[in-house]
Length: 91
Image 1 (cartoon, rainbow, N blue to C red):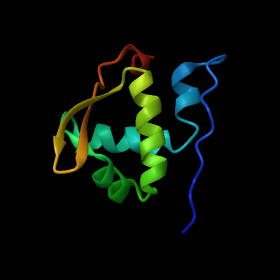
Image 2 (cartoon, rainbow, N blue to C red):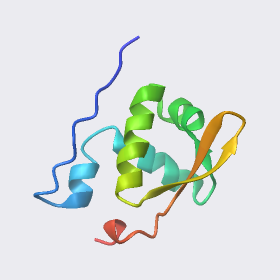
Image 3 (tube, rainbow, N blue to C red):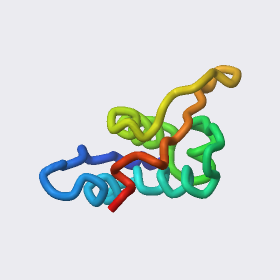
Image 4 (cartoon, one colour):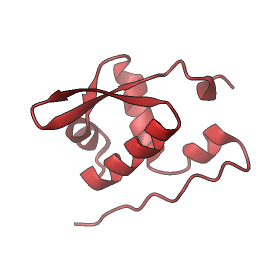
């Protein structure tokens, strides 16, 4: 199985543009499609066709940016809610 590696986000240019140049974009697109619904890493992995490790890396970056927030555990999986009203999305 091939694993995609996420390159670190370069904030020297436009923050949102830099964030969207890697697989994080697919995670954000999925978050926008489902709106305010909580999603787990396995749900995002299946929907975006990315490896679980890649989705976890993207979620970590989005959490640092304040776009994703952990909410509750669903079984053994951590659920996340996406703040799509974040100032980074207002361009």
